[in-house]
Length: 501
Image 1 (cartoon, rainbow, N blue to C red):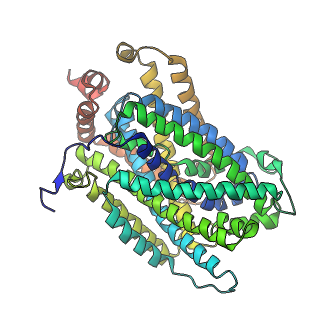
Image 2 (cartoon, helix red, strand yellow):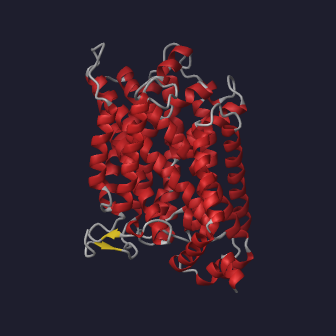
């Protein structure tokens, strides 16, 4: 590609609030989360899925407060990479960004695989009277999906945001209708409206906390708009609003919809077994409670949502790779923006290529086996849970950064001391919550390749690089000091700069 087509300058600030909100909503993917995330939880917590989501909302809200606190002052394409690096220091920032990069790359792989599963669920519903419905091998579906994703890579975010917002809007409306019908009919005849799903009746604390990682997975991406900090108009106002808006909208929706789904299938062993093996829970319930036509609409929306989530997570990971490469970690060829679309096209294409290769490798080897009896959904859960662990590590670092930012005396002269107690206490609770959840997920790992451990391996690699590669840390520190426009604070908080002085 010629030099006239590529550029290395920063993106233009032009995205409105709704575009930032739309990217976060699309990355979260409410339709995708509700249609594909419950199955993997049943083997861990049984019918107590709504309880897990309620606890997950409390934790993710604490994390959200930390992001809101920081994005009022710092905005950057690297998201956690810059939020942590601009406060604690460059090594911590590099580690946080590396963890978040692993998360969104994992999500991009997983959601591409899930697109293949949902396509077959749609085809099966089209042939609802057939005992052996025609199915497309999911490697073919993800290959076609990756080809389309390549074409979209680096496109205008506002265009992608509009498309994804329409898809999620249709999906949310359909979910609300389905929930109302399930409640009106009193749930499954065998068990009815069973409120014990919000209790510890048949589960213990270890099981619930192990399941919270999967619940966090459903909210993963609420902070995606933070990666648009360099492209959003008035980011110190609009990015925090987009973060808060995403959490409020999805928090209420997820708990209500998961409750409706659990009682819709039934909380007895037969109902839970059917839910666990469902290719698309919303589609199956739509068929049971409303009819085939409605089910087809729901599943088609879920297909679009899964693919849209893949596109959005690839775009987020691509922006992080671009931010790393721009600051000296990675090939300079990835540190460029396309002149026409103003997006990190090459970096995003790299993420899409990785997603395709990983998906095809899983299909070829038959690994992993996660208990859903659907290899595409198994692949989704492996990479999504590993990515969720990476994301929680990055969230932990953001919580520490928020505490540091609020409690550090050097910030008082610039930002004042208002709200110091909440600015320290709430992120501290969030960090504690994350630490407890991670512990419960790794302490009883069955094999060295369990999904939570895979996520931790990636984070350990990032930690080794952050500690050992002092040259990278120095470059990151110098770049962040300039890019965040905090020359005084950047110098004070950069330990390498302090040592040199």
